[in-house]
Amino acid sequence: MASAGGKVRLRLIEPADIRLRTGRKYQRLRRACLFISCALTFALPVWHLRSIEAQSEGLARGGRWAVIGEAIGFPDWAPPLVGAPTSIAIVGLELLDPVLAFAVLVSAGPSAQLGIASIIVAVLVVLFGRFFCGWLCPYLPILAASNAMRSLLARLGFRTRDVPLPKRSAFAVLGVLLVASAATGSQILPLVYPPAVIGREAFRAVFYGGLGAGAVILGGAFVFDTFVSRAGFCRYLCPGGAMFALFGALSPVVVKRTASACTDCGLCDQVCNMLQEPMTDRVDAGCDRCGKCVASCPTDALAIGFGTPPLLHPRARATTPAKGVGRESA
Image (tube, rainbow, N blue to C red; front, side):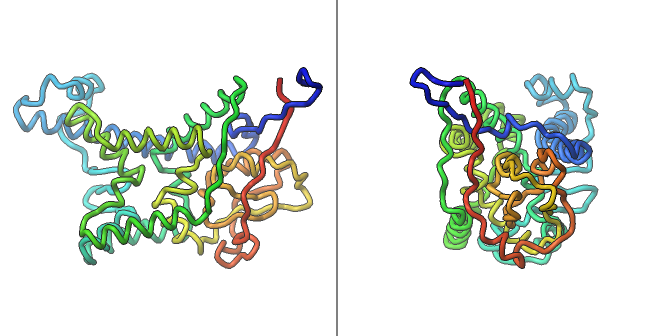
Protein backbone atom coordinates (compact mmCIF):
# COMPACT_ATOMS: atom_id res chain seq x y z
CA MET A 1 0.00 0.00 0.00
CA ALA A 2 1.08 3.59 -0.53
CA SER A 3 2.29 5.65 2.39
CA ALA A 4 1.22 9.22 3.17
CA GLY A 5 3.99 10.55 0.97
CA GLY A 6 2.84 8.48 -1.98
CA LYS A 7 5.74 6.04 -1.78
CA VAL A 8 5.40 2.28 -1.64
CA ARG A 9 6.80 0.80 1.54
CA LEU A 10 8.49 -2.57 1.06
CA ARG A 11 9.17 -5.22 3.67
CA LEU A 12 11.62 -8.05 3.28
CA ILE A 13 9.96 -11.43 3.31
CA GLU A 14 11.05 -13.33 6.39
CA PRO A 15 11.46 -17.14 6.36
CA ALA A 16 8.32 -17.50 8.50
CA ASP A 17 6.32 -15.78 5.73
CA ILE A 18 7.18 -18.37 3.08
CA ARG A 19 4.94 -21.43 2.84
CA LEU A 20 6.61 -24.79 2.27
CA ARG A 21 4.55 -26.20 -0.60
CA THR A 22 6.19 -29.55 -1.35
CA GLY A 23 8.55 -32.11 0.13
CA ARG A 24 6.31 -32.76 3.12
CA LYS A 25 7.63 -36.28 3.71
CA TYR A 26 11.17 -34.92 3.76
CA GLN A 27 10.21 -32.16 6.18
CA ARG A 28 8.29 -34.56 8.43
CA LEU A 29 11.28 -36.89 8.59
CA ARG A 30 13.62 -34.01 9.34
CA ARG A 31 11.34 -32.68 12.09
CA ALA A 32 10.95 -36.16 13.55
CA CYS A 33 14.73 -36.50 13.77
CA LEU A 34 14.96 -33.06 15.37
CA PHE A 35 12.23 -33.97 17.87
CA ILE A 36 14.07 -37.16 18.86
CA SER A 37 17.32 -35.22 19.27
CA CYS A 38 15.69 -32.60 21.49
CA ALA A 39 13.75 -35.24 23.41
CA LEU A 40 16.94 -37.15 24.18
CA THR A 41 18.64 -33.94 25.26
CA PHE A 42 15.98 -33.06 27.84
CA ALA A 43 14.46 -36.44 28.74
CA LEU A 44 17.60 -38.48 29.38
CA PRO A 45 18.69 -36.42 32.42
CA VAL A 46 15.21 -36.91 33.93
CA TRP A 47 15.32 -40.63 33.19
CA HIS A 48 18.74 -41.02 34.80
CA LEU A 49 17.64 -38.97 37.78
CA ARG A 50 14.88 -41.53 38.37
CA SER A 51 17.51 -44.27 38.36
CA ILE A 52 19.69 -42.39 40.84
CA GLU A 53 16.66 -41.80 43.02
CA ALA A 54 15.96 -45.53 43.16
CA GLN A 55 19.60 -46.40 43.84
CA SER A 56 19.91 -43.81 46.59
CA GLU A 57 16.85 -45.14 48.40
CA GLY A 58 14.84 -42.05 47.79
CA LEU A 59 17.41 -39.37 48.67
CA ALA A 60 16.54 -37.52 45.46
CA ARG A 61 12.81 -37.94 45.96
CA GLY A 62 10.76 -34.79 46.19
CA GLY A 63 12.86 -32.81 43.73
CA ARG A 64 11.05 -31.02 40.94
CA TRP A 65 12.38 -33.20 38.13
CA ALA A 66 12.07 -36.42 40.12
CA VAL A 67 8.38 -35.62 40.52
CA ILE A 68 8.12 -34.94 36.77
CA GLY A 69 9.85 -38.25 36.06
CA GLU A 70 7.31 -40.04 38.24
CA ALA A 71 4.42 -38.20 36.57
CA ILE A 72 5.64 -39.15 33.11
CA GLY A 73 6.01 -42.73 34.24
CA PHE A 74 9.72 -43.20 33.57
CA PRO A 75 10.90 -46.52 35.04
CA ASP A 76 13.47 -46.48 37.84
CA TRP A 77 16.15 -48.20 35.76
CA ALA A 78 18.28 -46.05 33.46
CA PRO A 79 18.14 -46.76 29.70
CA PRO A 80 21.23 -47.96 27.78
CA LEU A 81 21.64 -44.37 26.57
CA VAL A 82 24.02 -41.77 27.95
CA GLY A 83 24.50 -38.23 26.68
CA ALA A 84 22.88 -36.51 23.68
CA PRO A 85 23.06 -35.20 21.11
CA THR A 86 26.76 -34.39 20.68
CA SER A 87 28.11 -37.34 22.62
CA ILE A 88 25.97 -40.40 23.15
CA ALA A 89 26.50 -44.04 24.06
CA ILE A 90 23.89 -46.47 22.73
CA VAL A 91 24.06 -50.01 24.16
CA GLY A 92 27.81 -49.65 24.47
CA LEU A 93 28.40 -47.98 21.07
CA GLU A 94 29.86 -44.51 21.59
CA LEU A 95 29.18 -41.79 19.01
CA LEU A 96 31.01 -38.49 19.34
CA ASP A 97 30.48 -35.22 17.51
CA PRO A 98 33.65 -34.52 15.45
CA VAL A 99 33.62 -30.96 16.83
CA LEU A 100 34.00 -32.22 20.38
CA ALA A 101 36.48 -34.85 19.23
CA PHE A 102 38.76 -32.12 17.88
CA ALA A 103 38.35 -30.15 21.09
CA VAL A 104 39.56 -33.16 23.09
CA LEU A 105 42.28 -33.92 20.53
CA VAL A 106 43.94 -30.50 20.74
CA SER A 107 43.59 -30.20 24.52
CA ALA A 108 44.42 -33.72 25.67
CA GLY A 109 46.06 -35.41 22.69
CA PRO A 110 44.98 -38.25 20.38
CA SER A 111 43.57 -41.58 21.49
CA ALA A 112 42.26 -44.64 19.68
CA GLN A 113 38.97 -44.53 21.57
CA LEU A 114 38.46 -40.92 20.53
CA GLY A 115 38.98 -41.78 16.88
CA ILE A 116 36.66 -44.78 16.96
CA ALA A 117 33.88 -42.79 18.65
CA SER A 118 34.02 -39.94 16.14
CA ILE A 119 34.73 -41.78 12.87
CA ILE A 120 31.12 -42.89 12.25
CA VAL A 121 29.71 -39.37 12.62
CA ALA A 122 32.58 -37.89 10.58
CA VAL A 123 31.89 -40.30 7.71
CA LEU A 124 28.17 -39.41 7.80
CA VAL A 125 29.02 -35.71 7.56
CA VAL A 126 31.36 -36.34 4.62
CA LEU A 127 28.61 -38.28 2.87
CA PHE A 128 25.63 -36.06 3.66
CA GLY A 129 27.21 -32.69 4.36
CA ARG A 130 26.26 -30.32 7.16
CA PHE A 131 23.08 -32.30 7.92
CA PHE A 132 23.58 -32.19 11.71
CA CYS A 133 22.82 -28.45 11.67
CA GLY A 134 19.55 -28.92 9.79
CA TRP A 135 18.36 -32.22 11.24
CA LEU A 136 19.66 -32.75 14.78
CA CYS A 137 20.93 -29.53 16.36
CA PRO A 138 18.83 -28.67 19.46
CA TYR A 139 19.47 -24.98 18.79
CA LEU A 140 17.04 -25.13 15.84
CA PRO A 141 13.89 -24.53 17.97
CA ILE A 142 15.58 -21.40 19.37
CA LEU A 143 16.42 -20.28 15.83
CA ALA A 144 12.83 -20.94 14.73
CA ALA A 145 11.60 -18.79 17.63
CA SER A 146 14.01 -16.05 16.54
CA ASN A 147 12.73 -16.16 12.96
CA ALA A 148 9.15 -16.03 14.21
CA MET A 149 9.99 -13.01 16.35
CA ARG A 150 11.62 -11.26 13.40
CA SER A 151 8.51 -11.87 11.29
CA LEU A 152 6.25 -10.57 14.07
CA LEU A 153 8.35 -7.43 14.52
CA ALA A 154 8.29 -6.80 10.76
CA ARG A 155 4.50 -7.11 10.71
CA LEU A 156 4.29 -4.62 13.56
CA GLY A 157 6.33 -2.14 11.53
CA PHE A 158 9.71 -2.58 13.20
CA ARG A 159 12.63 -2.91 10.84
CA THR A 160 14.61 -6.09 11.49
CA ARG A 161 18.29 -5.88 10.65
CA ASP A 162 20.36 -8.50 8.88
CA VAL A 163 23.95 -7.31 9.28
CA PRO A 164 26.33 -9.35 7.11
CA LEU A 165 29.64 -10.52 8.53
CA PRO A 166 32.53 -12.09 6.62
CA LYS A 167 31.55 -15.62 5.62
CA ARG A 168 34.82 -16.94 7.04
CA SER A 169 34.05 -15.60 10.50
CA ALA A 170 32.95 -19.00 11.77
CA PHE A 171 36.21 -20.56 10.61
CA ALA A 172 38.12 -17.85 12.47
CA VAL A 173 36.10 -18.56 15.62
CA LEU A 174 36.79 -22.28 15.24
CA GLY A 175 40.51 -21.69 14.78
CA VAL A 176 40.79 -19.37 17.77
CA LEU A 177 38.94 -21.80 20.04
CA LEU A 178 41.07 -24.77 18.95
CA VAL A 179 44.29 -22.80 19.43
CA ALA A 180 43.11 -21.63 22.85
CA SER A 181 42.25 -25.21 23.80
CA ALA A 182 45.68 -26.42 22.71
CA ALA A 183 47.45 -23.59 24.56
CA THR A 184 45.56 -24.05 27.82
CA GLY A 185 45.03 -27.80 27.74
CA SER A 186 41.34 -27.31 28.43
CA GLN A 187 38.23 -27.82 26.33
CA ILE A 188 37.12 -24.28 25.57
CA LEU A 189 35.15 -24.98 22.41
CA PRO A 190 32.26 -26.84 24.15
CA LEU A 191 31.68 -23.74 26.28
CA VAL A 192 30.20 -21.88 23.28
CA TYR A 193 29.08 -24.72 20.98
CA PRO A 194 25.25 -24.58 21.20
CA PRO A 195 24.46 -28.34 21.20
CA ALA A 196 27.00 -28.91 23.98
CA VAL A 197 25.75 -25.85 25.87
CA ILE A 198 22.11 -26.96 25.63
CA GLY A 199 22.93 -30.50 26.74
CA ARG A 200 24.93 -29.18 29.69
CA GLU A 201 22.20 -26.74 30.73
CA ALA A 202 19.54 -29.47 30.50
CA PHE A 203 21.61 -31.65 32.84
CA ARG A 204 22.25 -28.74 35.19
CA ALA A 205 18.56 -27.83 35.32
CA VAL A 206 17.49 -31.40 36.11
CA PHE A 207 20.18 -32.33 38.63
CA TYR A 208 20.86 -28.95 40.26
CA GLY A 209 17.58 -27.12 39.74
CA GLY A 210 19.00 -24.09 37.93
CA LEU A 211 20.83 -22.78 34.89
CA GLY A 212 24.40 -21.66 34.43
CA ALA A 213 26.38 -19.31 32.22
CA GLY A 214 25.38 -21.37 29.18
CA ALA A 215 21.89 -19.93 29.40
CA VAL A 216 23.39 -16.46 29.01
CA ILE A 217 25.22 -17.60 25.86
CA LEU A 218 22.04 -19.06 24.40
CA GLY A 219 20.11 -15.90 25.27
CA GLY A 220 22.79 -13.79 23.63
CA ALA A 221 22.65 -15.94 20.49
CA PHE A 222 18.86 -15.52 20.36
CA VAL A 223 19.13 -11.73 20.71
CA PHE A 224 21.87 -11.60 18.06
CA ASP A 225 19.81 -13.70 15.62
CA THR A 226 16.66 -11.68 16.25
CA PHE A 227 17.88 -8.09 16.30
CA VAL A 228 21.27 -8.06 14.56
CA SER A 229 21.62 -10.77 11.91
CA ARG A 230 19.12 -13.44 10.90
CA ALA A 231 20.54 -16.85 11.90
CA GLY A 232 23.77 -14.93 12.41
CA PHE A 233 25.13 -17.19 15.11
CA CYS A 234 24.79 -20.27 12.90
CA ARG A 235 26.16 -18.43 9.86
CA TYR A 236 29.06 -16.51 11.34
CA LEU A 237 29.90 -17.63 14.87
CA CYS A 238 29.14 -21.31 15.41
CA PRO A 239 32.38 -23.35 15.50
CA GLY A 240 30.42 -26.54 14.92
CA GLY A 241 28.89 -25.21 11.72
CA ALA A 242 32.37 -24.31 10.46
CA MET A 243 33.71 -27.77 11.27
CA PHE A 244 30.80 -29.51 9.56
CA ALA A 245 31.21 -27.27 6.50
CA LEU A 246 34.85 -28.38 6.24
CA PHE A 247 33.91 -32.05 6.52
CA GLY A 248 30.93 -31.68 4.19
CA ALA A 249 32.77 -29.94 1.37
CA LEU A 250 33.14 -33.32 -0.38
CA SER A 251 29.54 -34.41 0.13
CA PRO A 252 27.91 -35.65 -3.10
CA VAL A 253 24.42 -34.85 -1.73
CA VAL A 254 23.56 -31.40 -3.10
CA VAL A 255 20.69 -29.11 -4.05
CA LYS A 256 20.11 -29.35 -7.82
CA ARG A 257 18.19 -26.88 -9.97
CA THR A 258 16.35 -27.40 -13.26
CA ALA A 259 17.05 -24.07 -14.97
CA SER A 260 14.21 -24.42 -17.47
CA ALA A 261 11.66 -24.66 -14.65
CA CYS A 262 13.10 -21.81 -12.55
CA THR A 263 11.23 -18.47 -12.64
CA ASP A 264 13.88 -16.53 -10.65
CA CYS A 265 11.33 -15.69 -7.95
CA GLY A 266 14.01 -15.75 -5.23
CA LEU A 267 11.92 -17.52 -2.59
CA CYS A 268 14.47 -20.32 -2.26
CA ASP A 269 17.25 -17.83 -1.54
CA GLN A 270 15.19 -15.95 1.02
CA VAL A 271 13.95 -18.96 2.98
CA CYS A 272 17.51 -20.21 3.48
CA ASN A 273 19.00 -19.38 6.88
CA MET A 274 22.50 -20.24 5.69
CA LEU A 275 22.86 -17.58 2.96
CA GLN A 276 22.82 -20.13 0.16
CA GLU A 277 21.62 -19.07 -3.30
CA PRO A 278 20.07 -22.09 -5.01
CA MET A 279 18.32 -19.80 -7.52
CA THR A 280 21.69 -19.23 -9.18
CA ASP A 281 23.28 -22.60 -8.29
CA ARG A 282 25.44 -21.04 -5.60
CA VAL A 283 25.13 -23.65 -2.87
CA ASP A 284 28.33 -24.31 -0.97
CA ALA A 285 29.35 -26.51 1.98
CA GLY A 286 27.33 -24.26 4.31
CA CYS A 287 24.08 -25.92 3.17
CA ASP A 288 22.51 -27.80 6.09
CA ARG A 289 20.23 -30.01 3.93
CA CYS A 290 17.08 -28.67 5.60
CA GLY A 291 15.27 -28.84 2.24
CA LYS A 292 13.29 -25.65 2.79
CA CYS A 293 14.47 -24.19 -0.52
CA VAL A 294 13.11 -27.25 -2.32
CA ALA A 295 9.82 -27.13 -0.42
CA SER A 296 9.32 -23.40 -1.09
CA CYS A 297 9.85 -23.55 -4.86
CA PRO A 298 6.51 -22.93 -6.62
CA THR A 299 7.63 -24.65 -9.85
CA ASP A 300 9.47 -27.70 -8.42
CA ALA A 301 12.69 -26.51 -10.01
CA LEU A 302 14.81 -27.67 -7.05
CA ALA A 303 15.61 -31.12 -5.72
CA ILE A 304 18.08 -32.74 -3.35
CA GLY A 305 20.12 -35.44 -5.05
CA PHE A 306 23.59 -36.55 -6.04
CA GLY A 307 25.86 -34.12 -7.85
CA THR A 308 29.22 -32.38 -7.83
CA PRO A 309 30.52 -31.81 -4.27
CA PRO A 310 30.76 -28.12 -3.24
CA LEU A 311 34.57 -28.25 -3.07
CA LEU A 312 34.70 -29.22 -6.75
CA HIS A 313 31.94 -26.85 -7.84
CA PRO A 314 33.45 -23.41 -8.71
CA ARG A 315 30.04 -21.71 -8.87
CA ALA A 316 29.17 -22.95 -5.39
CA ARG A 317 32.43 -21.59 -3.98
CA ALA A 318 31.64 -18.13 -5.43
CA THR A 319 28.65 -17.60 -3.13
CA THR A 320 27.79 -13.97 -2.45
CA PRO A 321 25.47 -12.53 0.22
CA ALA A 322 21.83 -13.25 -0.59
CA LYS A 323 19.59 -10.41 -1.58
CA GLY A 324 16.24 -10.00 0.14
CA VAL A 325 12.93 -10.32 -1.63
CA GLY A 326 10.64 -7.35 -1.22
CA ARG A 327 6.86 -7.14 -1.23
CA GLU A 328 4.23 -4.57 -0.60
CA SER A 329 2.99 -4.29 2.95
CA ALA A 330 0.55 -2.10 4.76
